[in-house]
Length: 160
Image (cartoon, rainbow, N blue to C red; front, top):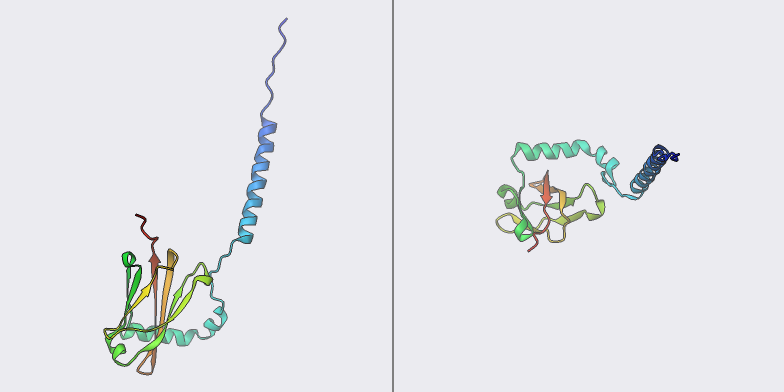
């Protein structure tokens, strides 16, 4: 007589392995989402909401008078060139440039407006991390406030 050779059933092991993988993935996702910092709003968003109407007036004034700042990103020179409207340069526009990183508030920077005689200002991007940035420019010219907000994608430095 030949003894019967039976193969073990793989289903119990497969079911147990599935639950182990599923539980591990769930715990890993919970831990990742708990410790990953995601900053998608400004720290003073409530104050900004209160001042929303005056902000909208600045934006409308900027668009109606075609006073947008020209933003020219030059990745090879690691710089951003800002071009302010000549009529505002003639009136001695003053204000601030806010480099805002939506995904990481700790990377934000605020700089004063310091343009040359032609109304151009150069910003160094060497220390800015690659990714999406917003350039928010608030300035006063001829006793009126203006605001321009533009998106900019900083690309990684080319490797040689």
